[in-house]
Image 1 (cartoon, rainbow, N blue to C red):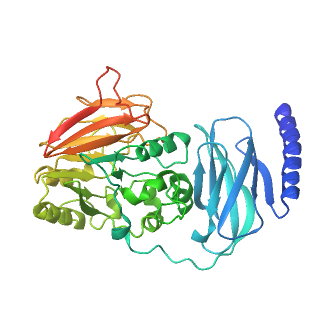
Image 2: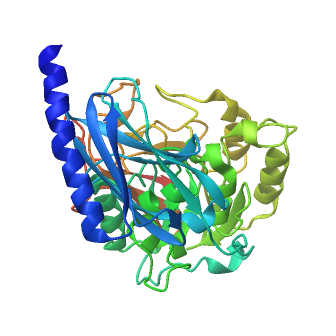
Image 3: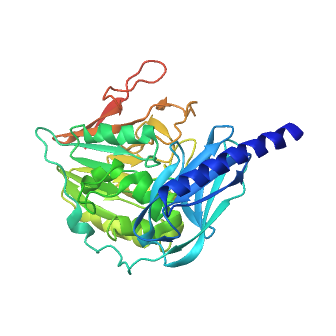
Length: 404
């Protein structure tokens, strides 16, 4: 205990000098140092009154690995999973007034440490919500030959692995991205802006990270961003809880598996079910693809979607695409419809297989699903970030097809 306290004292002195020197060199910069979960934390921002996009920087000294959790007045702000421990805070998306920026360390498998607090004031002109023009911002990419779309979820966490998946889709021949839900950790405005990346339709520079792909993305609501539904809708320009569209000769239904967020849930008496039934009865397309976040079948099953699955299967459904589990899976057809899980978006890949009878599965591989539309058939490949087809442990490739 004496040695630990001595180490802390010495480290505190060194870092306090460093923080003071940094603040002095930067002029108006405001800094604060303290301890969280046996890690020495120093946080700095450019001043005490903040406006617009503000860089937040943190230096840490202590045992690793860990995550850094940022809060604003005890509410979620952002979780940073990898160094460098810094982000740009879009303060205009938060209410004006004084509060405390909190920085806590969460060790791997441990408890969240006490927050180091920095008192600040936000002062921005009033910001209007994003325009309700979701129907017009979507612009699929041009393609030659058969149309190809990509599908993946469980990315958008600000990590190198997640950024590599986004880049691989950008470099692919996919004209459309179906993002299958879950940005991390809680879908706050700051996490949308930084971990997922500012959207191309809102950024004159063309967006960053997953946001570069936003113009040709159709998003599915995940359980993580469901914590802050207003931020999700605001990012996607007031996108509704579910939607349908036609692209490449395919009818797509983008559904919502966060059934507690939907009026009357997801059963036959729900608004979502009645809406989907009407779409299926009136759509002329031969191929039908549905997306939602939580899979009906598998180790992490969500049986609340059973009625919507049956509705689709009995009315021409061909593929159901899900995320939620952080790997790649292909299931045997049920009533002629195939479930594919594409959760390799880069966030904490499942390294150990979670077997399910008769299922092709590849774990621990960041990458995405690519589906090619050829006449009245859908052909798919699971690819890693280098564009190579992924194989499972016994060497079977992650490919398949279904006739519509």
